[in-house]
Length: 383
Image (cartoon, rainbow, N blue to C red; front, side):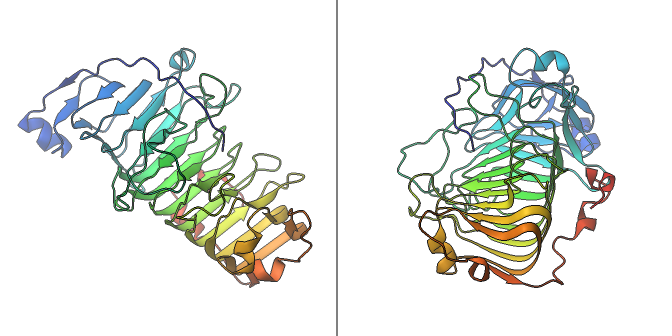
């Protein structure tokens, strides 16, 4: 989790044209205007439909409050190498805006880059959603690190749209001030009305999926070879994550899960306390790392967890209280580590936390990996 003060890029107007009844018939579109041309750019102030096709994403694309950007299944959206060299390219949805990108297993929606991560760092800024759900902390009108846009509120049922069968590849470009890298998927205070199903973060330079508070839930997430963390949460995140697969090639990436409630203010309410079910982690066997980095007051209820190819399963830092009181636990856990299951990093605390944190079961199967067949890069992996 890297913080920033990011100056917004200049944004250009987006040219659109009204759709006819023929457009509606051909594209199954009931969402206003149809995009003109093949470049997605600028500020989207009213509903816009992107029919199935190949497109370029250019610059900072903003979906404003009250507008919905709908992308049809089977579309591929690419950031070109030329645009990579001119600045940040990112898709951002502001509070009250929506992104509806609903692919299928046969026709996923792919966000990718022409450079395919060949340079230093990532190529673009990924997908960033801003919602009005609750977070913890004392900030008034907090601004997101990815874009310096407002997020959070009091509506835990808020919706920022729907993502189904969406791949985000080669994201994680550094911010303009060099203080952080964008994630593949960033969820800032997104509410439970936001739908996230069957999404892949692939070979990004920062995190795969990061949840900044909120209550959004997600099903069938796969993160492959992220250079930082694969799953990250903080600021009081309280959703449910179901069927999660993390694949780290040897010596690539940081933690599979980096989990926090609130930096420096560990006990603020609401506490991060998600439910996580059916997880498989093939770790990176990186020296001095673990599958889970547990810190800063996070709680969480994990069930059916399979972890292997790691030095440690979990680092316990400054949330021993949550381990000891049972609000942070992993049941039905099939764990294999070369050095140890738990490393207690708390000074002056020598308690063996293994049996408090884990209820082990060598028959636990973890994620259903077949859920990622056909639409993700899973078929290229050897688990």
